Amino acid sequence: MYVRHALVLASAVVALTACGASSPEPAATTTASAAAAASPSATAPATGLTITDPWVKTTEEGMTAAFGTLVNNTDAAVTITSGTSPLSPTIELHEVVEDGGKMVMRPKKGGFVVPARGTHQLQPGGDHIMLMGVTEEVKPGARIAFTLQVQGGEPLEFTAIGKDFAGGEEDYQPGHK
Image 1 (tube, rainbow, N blue to C red):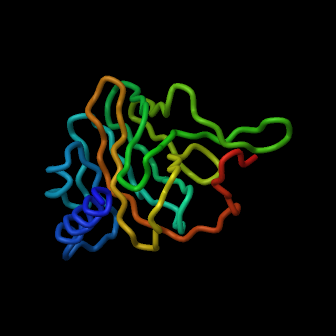
Image 2 (image 1 turned 90 degrees about the horizontal axis):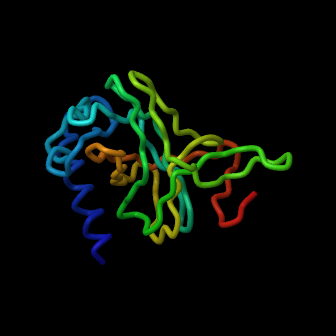
Image 3 (image 1 turned 45 degrees about the horizontal axis):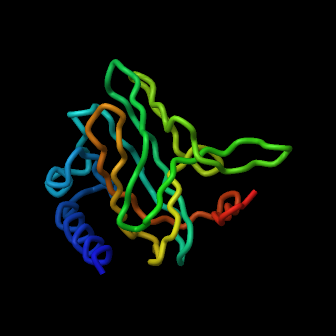
């Protein structure tokens, strides 16, 4: 029940702040209150970390993943150590690697490192934010709240947009090889 209320509230806030915006791109901010007041071009000045084009693969339930480009505007590397979302009780930072001639997904040891003044791509078939135990359908255009924990820094809060994607026919199921 709390998750549903949080999603409705987050959707209302995003809808109100996005009125008149020319781009559907969500804002990347450092606090929930800042997220409510941010414009689509806002950044995260406290950490210098932003995300561009964040999106979540649509799903009926079960597992899905989030993608985008992490951008570090500071002179030091930034490490993302974990994430949360009201959509999922369990989130892991994943990578896709070759193992025994097959591509497999697994938790990324040490998290995602975004180099100083650089970017880190989250994409299908590569590093991504894995959402497990999703019980609500993610439809195209849905707005999903996320918080990424930054080692030694302020968390990055953002909203990702639900997007249909067939791609490599990823099957986000437990034990999927």
